[in-house]
Length: 253
Image (cartoon, rainbow, N blue to C red; front, top):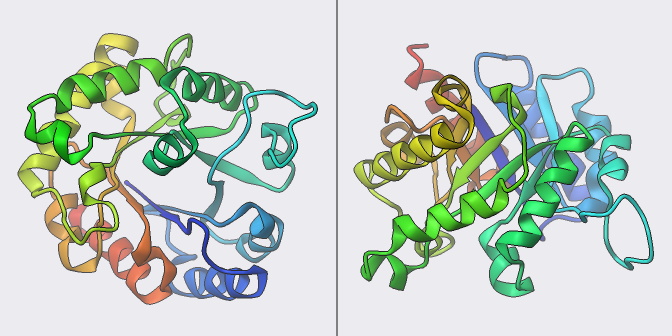
């Protein structure tokens, strides 16, 4: 089980370190549930310093596919490793929508992350019109296979997948537990066809569509929901810790 907080473009360095300290104080001494936080890149070093010695892992929100070069404003995988990152979010729906990232671009980043021993949190998910049109599975299949093109995964903990129904991000809408389970099980099947059933069984598939304390237990209680990629609720240490507690409960804590 993994609960990862995506802070998006929120917090300055001072606010980020304060939030990180709150998270560590609340959940930093438990290890039954994996916990990660992904602050803005300007705060990675400061937040990493706060997390040091705790069970909370550091993640980034994006990275470039090249080792280095004339890519103004971009961040390389080696840079993320140098500040202590374990995870990097790739292919988030907001990157696809606002920055026009393609499946091919996401795939190049995934391969780069793996080559630098970063664990990619690969995001996939359909828009509302695609679900209404019945094409959600073909959309997710295309995004996942595109992101994993050329990637080799032999150990499950080298990859995390996050299913984020775009229609449920920041809208207050949430997929029902049955809808989440159905898509997560489908993603597991896709992973099994790509990497084999044994590896696929161990890859964590997170739900990423407006999970919060009020609905976390129902979502995390589904067989193929292995955690959450948390947006707005991760900006409060109290609400984030409540989701971690729900994850603990779902494992029979």
